[in-house]
Amino acid sequence: MKSFLKLFLRKFIVLVMVSVFTSTASRAATPIDRVVAIAGNEVVTQSQLDRIIKSREDIGEPVKNAEERWEILRQLIEEQLVFQEAERKGIQVTDEDLEFALKDIETRNQFPSREALKKAVASDYLSWDQYLKNLKNQLMALKLLSREVNATVSLSEETVQSYYRAHPEIFGLPDRVKLKQILLSMPADVSTDTEKEIKEKAEKIYIEAQSGTDFIQLVREYSQGREKVQDGDLGFFKRGDLTPKIDELIFTLKEGEITPPVQTPLGMHIFKVEVHEIGRMRPFESVRQKIKERLIAEETSNLRAKWINDLWKRSFIEIR
Image (tube, rainbow, N blue to C red; front, side):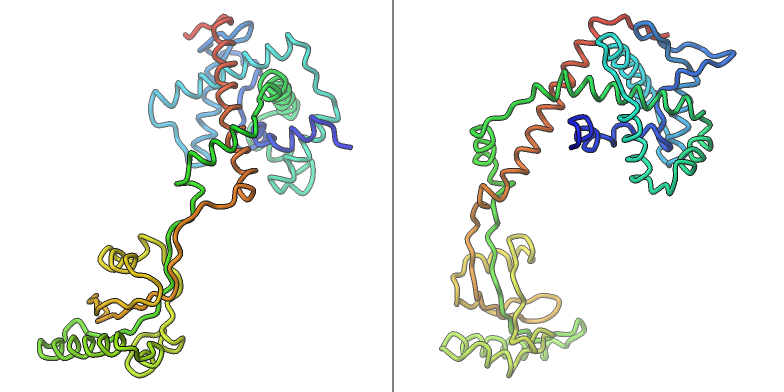
């Protein structure tokens, strides 16, 4: 049976993609390297900062300003603080944990073998030993956050139901109509006399439809739209799908009612509302799991931010 850690890693392993393309903090010493920050008992160096900036450039996301540069430095400091907190609290990463993470990285990045992953790491100018150390640190951080933050998240059924009731704009189904139409085409360069004739013809068809003549019969006899072969069937439309003029007209009609002729760049339209469905809420059970996942993610994010903020407050940090 998979351990809790394996299930946790499978869900959050994306956070440890220090693998190839977005390598994060490296503690490898360089002969001459400027210290840009001190985080607890570790330093953050210029080469670490430059490495991430270079990685961003390589994937087409260059750092554009001082604010983005500071955000990268902040993340490096945060990582160091979390790593140290994990060490202080005795968080352990086993060889089995490390191997599970490596295999997951290989699968997600479609590396056919361990050697392929090693070559990719080397191409990123990172030693394999340092890569494993970074990955192990990330796994320690994930374990710590799981224990300190994720395990404290609780969610009642009432909270889930309250969210559902409070957000009809998310979980509601919109009003929609199913339409048939008769279309009399009108070329853009039509003469005034011809335009008048087409409009008069549309008005006569409308009167005939209102008098009780079968609408499908009228479609087959007069319509010039492509949907004529489907007896004028246009399918379903929700509010906003049609032009404002048609939308406003259509959604005031009941099932079976017909619009007066409406002019558009295509010509003269006569619509019949076949079905008019009034919007309703999706069944709670069909969205319950999605609501839970959303609320848990929000709560986890809030608790993590608070935990990190508290960690910053009680740690020694110096920016140079």
